[in-house]
Image 1 (tube, rainbow, N blue to C red):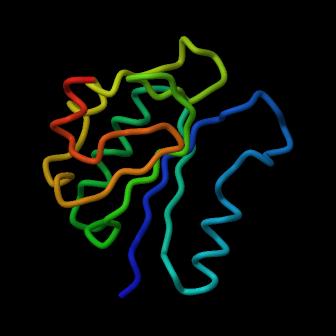
Image 2: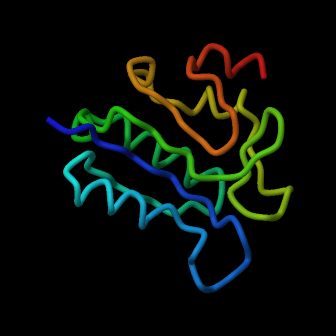
Image 3: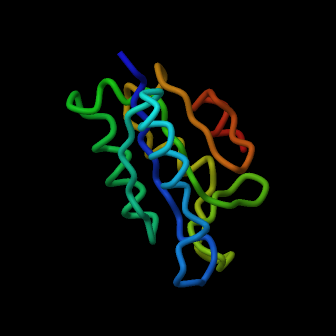
Length: 121
């Protein structure tokens, strides 16, 4: 069975062309039968929390990889180019579903892979 990738994608740049999206690479990998993916755009921390809880449900059990397609600064992720639109890794750790310890997290910003390590960021 191919690994499922659940991607939460921030806006990144304030442009309309959408060229900054990770969608094309995820679709390419899915077309090559390397992964299956689900991508959700996020514009605030409430949406991040909602999608993380959805990801934790049994129906997404085969989606073992969480890809946070966002920028960030040390200890924070940013879902837009506005630095005020950020979430600390410590807060992110509290939002993770209980079963996230068996999954992998990835981001364009360095994020520790253990949720316990996030709390100290």
